[in-house]
Length: 329
Ligand SMILES: Cc1ncc(C[n+]2csc(CCOP(=O)(O)OP(=O)(O)O)c2C)c(N)n1
Ligand SMILES: [Mg+2]
Image (cartoon, rainbow, N blue to C red; front, side, top):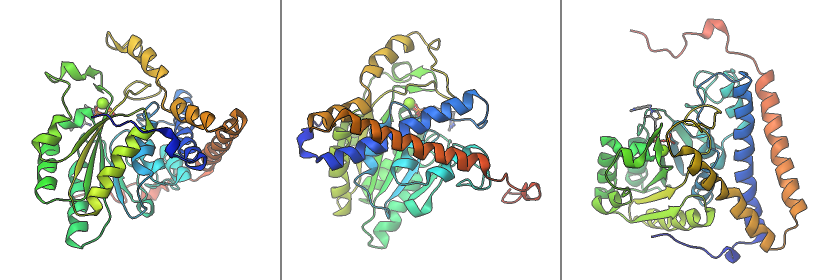
């Protein structure tokens, strides 16, 4: 059931923080899009623009000791959980100063200190890892929770159901966050499954399910807080379906207007539901002047620009290290 939160319950300071985090992700992604267009970044990159409310709504109530696992589209998860922006940007440039020493690229980002234990492009690959850290927390009587972020495409993998079942059976503090942007690559949800009923997986596997407007950070926050409270109390896992839309094409900076029959008209509709606009309206109705919002954008732009400079000026991995960490028989 969609949860609707009156925005009044958030202070201006809290709203500013939410806005800043979302704006930082948006600005970083749009800058990365430009760098991809200019071929300054060359690794395959899946942009998060349009889905910012999910990463920020889910990660805001978390502690640094909580764990997050992501997928191929995880810049937003990494940044919202407190991952180092400079190290992420350097990773995209393939630099030694990158969070994976330039060996991983956009789809393998990690910041252990911030609790981002890894992102992996194998669809659904990290869902069982969040179950594993959930099991570890339970066995050690720790109160940290684990989050698995995954797309609507991932629910078609068997490991999703195996993970949900095991987490539910063992009452693990794992929260399953499905970012349903209605596409897996270029295939619409209803070309892949008979019904738009991903949320029913929660009932099947015996855990609470919240289906929320993934573009509304307040709805995402409410669902996440309920799930985190339950998990920390030892009440077991929850499933959150966040309904949203990715603005860019599946991979790279294009807008994919020519892909699929519905994409062009859908994108127009979803752009009007801009997640940043929802928080901006809340800030304005709390009396924050538009100029202050403008200066938040400028600060985020400066932070992103500094990260790009750091990335560009850093060293490439040394050639003699080319085969380091490569598994060889
Ligand atoms: C196991 C596996 N199958 C197929 C792929 C190719 N692939 C990469 S991303 C993707 C689509 C994933 O869609 P979704 O989970 O909805 O995430 P979104 O891209 O929409 O964020 C596919 C099929 C893969 N990486 N791994
Ligand atoms: Mg998808």
